[in-house]
Image 1 (cartoon, rainbow, N blue to C red):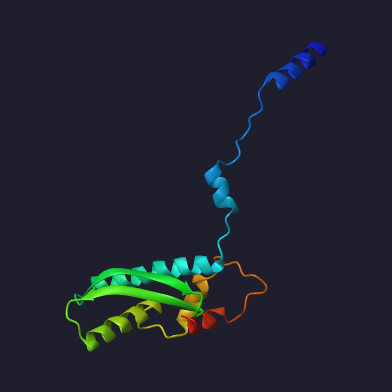
Image 2 (image 1 turned 60 degrees about the horizontal axis):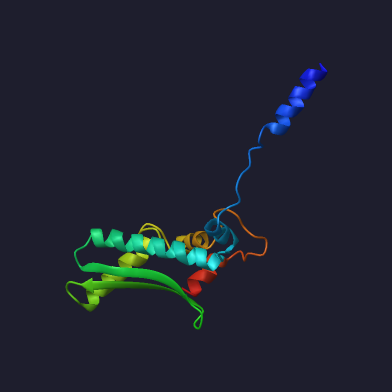
Amino acid sequence: MNQFLGLLIIVIIAYPAKGYPDPGKTSQWLINSPVSLMDWGVFHAEKDLKESVRNIEENTDMFHHLGSFAAYDWEEDEIQFIVRVEYKDITHTGCKIVRKALINDLRGGEHNKWDYLPIRMEGWFSNEGFRRGDQPEDIGKKLMNIT
């Protein structure tokens, strides 16, 4: 029995423990770099904005999409949606039609009322279902006021 116990101890000591390396420099930098909810929200808003513009572009031949982005303007305390398009027939009415279509798509389609946009905006600027205790109840409406 002592020989078996001695052999078992030798095997345990001699057997290399499986170790895991620390994250590399790049992974470590990403882990330690915080993303604010403002950054996160603007990213999601921009993604949805581009998708909305593509949806409209596919259903009309009024313009060609040159690019779009969302950004936060520190000086104005505004979230800006900027869409660059090249109109095939530049008219005031055509511009209004495209603008209305974009707003309707962002708020969830013509069947949805304006009530949906604050909910959608709150989703952009949140941690997907996690809510901090100090988060304002009406954050979606407040975001609409600065967008």
